[in-house]
Length: 468
Image (cartoon, rainbow, N blue to C red; front, side, top):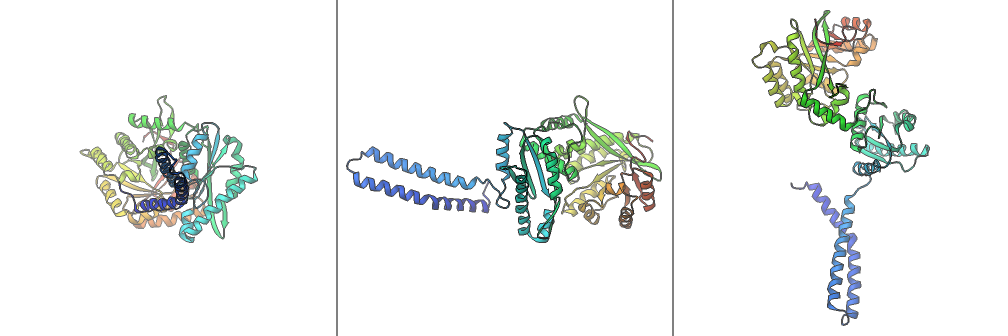
């Protein structure tokens, strides 16, 4: 594989620097050796001269090698002056063999907005300032020489010797103190998550878990279920995918007081029969590259339930957009639906993603292939994800589901006003509307008053098996 131009230029620059640093030492060694040779040339054995010049050559080579390699071993990040991710990971993996540690992930969640609005130079200044403020805060609590690493983007990881119980309140205070502060009128939004070596002794697994926690709540949190060792989770996921060991339940979605749709919910079933919630194993599914395979298993389970449906009822499956864009998934779905007219118009694929996929024309073409095959497409989390709003403009779908928080607060005046605006847009585009998390009568009446077509929530039906 050929080197990128920046890589080649970097090597060239390192060699020049090594040459400049090593040349004076080399010249001094040559001059010293030459002067000795000239003075005592007649009395020095020939073998000594050969050995001396050989040692000089080896010494110079080794010196150049050390200098060159020194440029390749960066310890601190040039922007924040915190440890680099590579150095921090290597160092902490050694430490984890000897001591207990607590790890804290602190993230600037609006770094992208800062870079776009104020420029990358100010974004870098924010990161440098945050790293220093973290160090100052730790020093105030008599904690010195604490490893702080700039992991990626606006993410910092702090390593504290000891268990999580020792630092819970201190880290809560850190989050509160830094959650919303300004630097030269730049507003900075920060969130954090924390775990310790009771979860794992692998630094990679600990970091993955921190990001999972961060993604779930975007605030300080702890797992609300019994923790499972990350290696065990990976083993369970692989085992469950291979054995298709998942438990499925369904929640009814109502239109005009009748169940017309059932959303699929699932859990992983361990060998001992225990259930693991999807929020615990879905990140592992994604990390192991099993999303498409898992979505195929989900779809097959939904197809198997179709005979239990009554009238025009459908089953909704939450599918990864990357699976829908994958031609292998399309081929698999086509095989399931081929020569079986009873399956036509019985499946709904629900999609949402945080990051906007810019090749929307290609994406839309793939979606239309599913729709022609009789699969409805529902765009999820409208009013919550920026990507969903953009997709509403570029993709042709059948129905739109609103952000869950809008369902929870449907009876509140501001939320209802927002729903009315979104509902007008959805109706103008000719799509059916869908809302979930309706938990009480007031929210239910508000959703009906707004004119939402499909209503879902525990107020109407719990998660259960499919039944009329």
